[in-house]
Amino acid sequence: MPELPDLVHVERKLREAVLGAEIASARVGDPTVLRVMIPEPFPGTLTGRRISSIDRRGHFMVFTLEPSLALAVNCMLVGRFALVPPADKLPKSLGLALTLDTPAGSQVDLRYVDDRRMGKIYVATPEQLKGVPQLGTLGVDLLSPAFTLENFRALAKKRRDQVRPFLMDKSAMASIGNAYADEILFAARLHPKTFVRKLTPEDVDRLYAAVVSVTKNAIEEVAARDEPINVKVRDFLSVRGRAGESCPSCGTTLREVRVGDSDAVFCPRCQPATRTLFVDWSKLPS
Image (cartoon, rainbow, N blue to C red; front, side):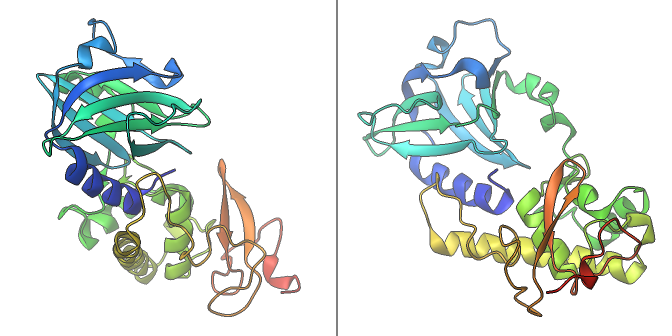
């Protein structure tokens, strides 16, 4: 899924390209991704509306349309945005395409494409947004001034689950996905199956510092690459997607382990287990 560093880049590029644009026409592809919460005919009701704001809220991208409408997009696993000429062929995985008259006097298509049809586009009034699943219950944003060490300590103190699910709980923090959960835990030198209640105060502080530094560095790297908004930049990550390769810090083979409903990649030496697990990766050949 596009994660926070990706979406910060997407938000900036979309604002530069289409903020203030008027919707000339709208086309629906596969309606599976749509959740229309208004009674007006869709997508016809979008025509003539102006994009007055584009805001990332956690892992959602929210487009405010004037008058009195909003699109809240949760890309989930593989959903992505694209800015292309209106004449470009529509892909089979299209969810929604908006042909826009931009303030610069040109036309461009803003498309949402989802090969797995797992993402969601919520069409709602601004007042209805608080009822959108997950959006209305997002925790503290990682880039907000409210994301302080003190608040992070308070969040951790309440947890009884493992540290990776804690990081990925979007009702606690908005928002960390699979890729950056692995990167943060690697930077903090914590095994993904460590229970939060077993963390020392020093562990908690180190974990907070890792969240801040990994997020900041990734945002800067993605911005520096300046790829099109449909491209995910992942090749600079230390461990995610590198199971079976050598740890960049110690050379030990990186391993993959199931944590909850997803797989985590970690280094058995840099991130040693703090309890007995079914497989002791540290005793296997590196």
